[in-house]
Image 1 (spheres, one colour):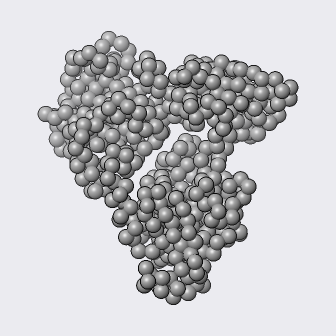
Image 2 (cartoon, helix red, strand yellow):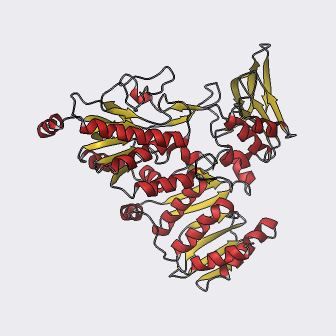
Length: 531
């Protein structure tokens, strides 16, 4: 199962185990069970602190599956399926942490996990090609290691297809808590804790409101926000970055091949590098916080205020808005009703759940055509629908798409409805824009790839926005409000690219610093004295 190189690397890692670890396998005579048992035997042979036993499956037990526990305990970690691909790291971390190797998380998070005083049984449905799934699996496994009242099972939807069908799991990762829907899509340990710890929001709001005003307060943690924070902190000024999700849209991007000087990388890897770089400076990172409103400074040199959804108010002598963008939705009947039940936005993550089925891709730009090419290797048939009369993707991508035998391309197609049976998608309706005729296509999945919308709804009426909702900025990133700057995909700057966003974030930070040194602080000091 594991090649010589992987065995050598894993053997070195397992030397970090301090306490004995027990693997209990639940297998039968099926091929997947044989593969699972082979993997576990390979691991067993690499460390004298790891032992393998075969358990007797009870009624309802998933087969193949196995548990990972510190010997003599029940840590509640289960892997149902074969955790290879992106999930191999999840298995390695589970082995290390069950064996006493300390996790790389903040001490206050560890204490918060240990303090949870209710029984929590999590189930996470994944696909091995999903790059967002391991974050969820690793977070919940860690919680199971630290708190005996928490149990977690990783379930490979490709292996347990009947269960996936029965529970209408049509997107990964999908998380159930005590049998009920808990979350979908990438979730960090912080996000999961905030959701199960009901008092966390109030505690966060109190701590955030006590913070001193920042010289530069950045709203948004994507490439633009991260770059702005580094450039601002390097000037030696008080810098804070408040983000709903550090990394933003890049966390959902798989292949990145146009980031200059880096031949090829993946979104999560780039975000990890960004976060590590930001941590090299004195930047106050306030993650998992959503901005609700902005109040520009009343006087030159005064403080702008950003109010968060939890009620906290942060102040800054300058503010940089770098809130990025989100997937544009079709806005047709059935889209929201069947979101996660056939309507999807990430082909890399959710594609394996549609193996052998007929799906549609909406959008003929690069992202749409790339999605169709990717899906064509997994599903039975792909129908790509483009609103315009021609595809807009690069010629090389179009050529590749047209060479695939299981792809049908329909142009001049306006999608008007996503249909379903009340449980899941069963088709879509589109209008031929040339003839005006309506057509119905029977299928099982719809992947929407029609571009982005700026995350600026909360700014309406505060600063100038374009008719597309983008923040209007000048050549220096200045908005219509003095002391308020903006950068990245949320602005009118053309070409929404990671490397451009980073440059714009850096420019906005330099502009904010220039604004600070040309503004008198007396007004701000007077405001602080009377607050």
